[in-house]
Image (cartoon, rainbow, N blue to C red; front, top):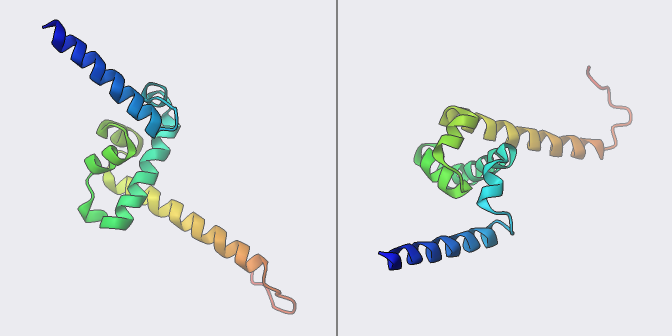
Length: 116
């Protein structure tokens, strides 16, 4: 039995090092207690997966796996998959309108009536 315990410790250490490398040195233990970082990771993973596969073909478990969080964290932050989709959509719209505003800011509108 001691061999099994030793193997488990070696495996756990290896996984910890692997995750640390994947997260740029930030360990899962540190990230677990940073709700905002977890929320951002979920949003980015969901955005990528929805874009690649569509809303209907993406499960919350796939999003959780891609974000490196538990599925319960998705439900904690967003309650439902539809609410998560809505947040991703709103972020995309905000980004789109920011780009449009910058583009419009560079257009010469002299002599054009502005509607308010």
